[in-house]
Image 1: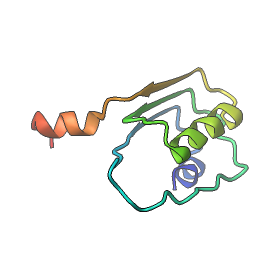
Image 2: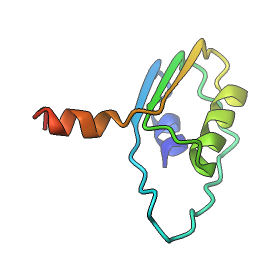
Image 3: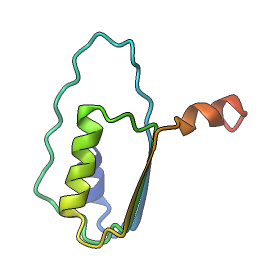
Image 4: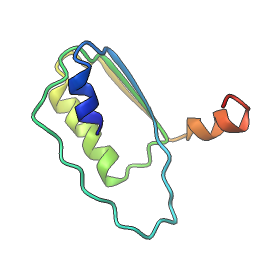
Length: 90
Protein backbone atom coordinates (compact mmCIF):
# COMPACT_ATOMS: atom_id res chain seq x y z
CA UNK A 1 0.00 0.00 0.00
CA UNK A 2 2.75 2.51 0.87
CA UNK A 3 4.76 1.97 -2.34
CA UNK A 4 1.53 2.56 -4.32
CA UNK A 5 1.01 5.78 -2.37
CA UNK A 6 4.58 6.87 -3.14
CA UNK A 7 4.05 6.14 -6.83
CA UNK A 8 0.86 8.25 -6.79
CA UNK A 9 2.75 11.15 -5.14
CA UNK A 10 5.95 11.44 -7.20
CA UNK A 11 6.89 14.88 -5.81
CA UNK A 12 6.63 13.89 -2.13
CA UNK A 13 9.78 14.91 -0.25
CA UNK A 14 8.95 13.97 3.36
CA UNK A 15 7.18 10.87 4.64
CA UNK A 16 6.06 10.20 8.22
CA UNK A 17 4.63 6.81 9.14
CA UNK A 18 3.17 6.22 12.58
CA UNK A 19 2.88 2.50 13.10
CA UNK A 20 1.13 0.50 15.74
CA UNK A 21 1.88 -3.16 16.17
CA UNK A 22 0.13 -5.70 18.29
CA UNK A 23 2.68 -7.93 20.00
CA UNK A 24 0.06 -10.45 21.13
CA UNK A 25 -1.36 -11.01 17.65
CA UNK A 26 -1.38 -14.70 16.75
CA UNK A 27 -1.87 -14.10 13.03
CA UNK A 28 1.26 -14.54 10.92
CA UNK A 29 2.51 -11.42 9.21
CA UNK A 30 1.64 -11.38 5.50
CA UNK A 31 4.74 -10.74 3.40
CA UNK A 32 4.42 -7.52 1.40
CA UNK A 33 6.04 -7.24 -2.02
CA UNK A 34 7.50 -3.96 -3.24
CA UNK A 35 7.45 -2.75 -6.84
CA UNK A 36 10.52 -1.70 -8.77
CA UNK A 37 9.31 1.95 -8.65
CA UNK A 38 11.89 4.42 -7.30
CA UNK A 39 10.60 7.46 -5.35
CA UNK A 40 12.99 10.00 -6.85
CA UNK A 41 12.12 13.10 -4.79
CA UNK A 42 11.76 11.59 -1.31
CA UNK A 43 14.38 13.11 1.00
CA UNK A 44 13.36 12.24 4.56
CA UNK A 45 11.51 9.34 6.16
CA UNK A 46 10.37 9.09 9.78
CA UNK A 47 8.83 5.88 11.07
CA UNK A 48 7.52 5.94 14.64
CA UNK A 49 6.47 2.75 16.38
CA UNK A 50 9.19 0.84 14.53
CA UNK A 51 9.70 -2.59 16.11
CA UNK A 52 11.87 -4.33 13.55
CA UNK A 53 9.15 -6.69 12.38
CA UNK A 54 9.72 -8.25 8.97
CA UNK A 55 7.61 -5.98 6.70
CA UNK A 56 8.61 -2.60 8.19
CA UNK A 57 12.26 -3.67 8.02
CA UNK A 58 11.82 -4.71 4.38
CA UNK A 59 10.21 -1.30 3.70
CA UNK A 60 13.29 0.47 5.15
CA UNK A 61 15.57 -1.61 2.91
CA UNK A 62 13.31 -0.79 -0.04
CA UNK A 63 13.62 2.95 0.70
CA UNK A 64 17.40 2.76 1.16
CA UNK A 65 17.79 0.97 -2.16
CA UNK A 66 15.22 2.80 -4.29
CA UNK A 67 14.85 6.40 -3.03
CA UNK A 68 17.65 8.09 -4.98
CA UNK A 69 17.39 11.50 -3.23
CA UNK A 70 17.04 10.08 0.29
CA UNK A 71 19.03 12.08 2.85
CA UNK A 72 17.80 10.66 6.16
CA UNK A 73 15.77 7.84 7.66
CA UNK A 74 14.75 8.07 11.30
CA UNK A 75 13.41 4.99 13.08
CA UNK A 76 11.72 5.75 16.39
CA UNK A 77 10.52 2.81 18.52
CA UNK A 78 8.06 5.01 20.45
CA UNK A 79 4.47 4.67 19.27
CA UNK A 80 3.71 8.34 18.65
CA UNK A 81 0.09 7.75 17.73
CA UNK A 82 -0.64 6.30 21.18
CA UNK A 83 0.99 9.26 22.90
CA UNK A 84 -1.05 11.75 20.86
CA UNK A 85 -4.31 9.89 21.55
CA UNK A 86 -3.60 9.85 25.28
CA UNK A 87 -2.78 13.56 25.23
CA UNK A 88 -6.06 14.42 23.51
CA UNK A 89 -4.84 15.31 20.03
CA UNK A 90 -7.47 13.11 18.39
